[in-house]
Length: 120
Image 1 (tube, rainbow, N blue to C red):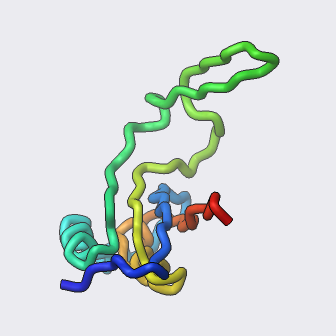
Image 2 (image 1 turned 180 degrees about the vertical axis):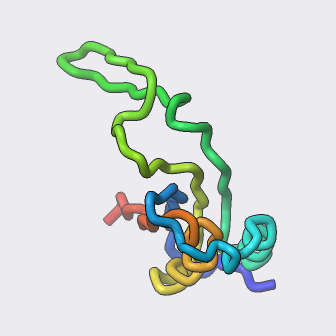
Image 3 (image 1 turned 45 degrees about the vertical axis):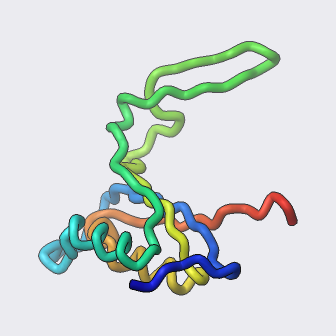
C-alpha cells in the first residue's frame, strides 16, 4: 500500500457536483464504494462525505456589524455541491486522475481546488 506522506504532497478539496448534462452512458461509471476503498487504500483520500440537499443549507453573513442568517443556499443554481473529498496527491496531475475515476465525473462534475499555503 502506497502512502502519501512526502513533503511535496499537496492537498486538494474535491467538490462533487451535480450537472445538467450528465454522460449519456452512465453504465461506464465506477462503483462509488470501490472508488472510496481504492482511494483510501492508496492514501489519496483523507476524508469525504455526502452533503444534505441545498434546502438544508444556512447562509451566514455579517454586514455593517449585523449578523444576517438566511435559509437555503447562497447561490440559486441547478448545479449543486452534493459531496466532497479531501485529497492528498503529489501534484495536480495525480488529483485529476483521482477525479476522473470518480463516478460523479460521469453523472455530474468534479471541481478540484488546491489549499492555499498561508505561510508563503
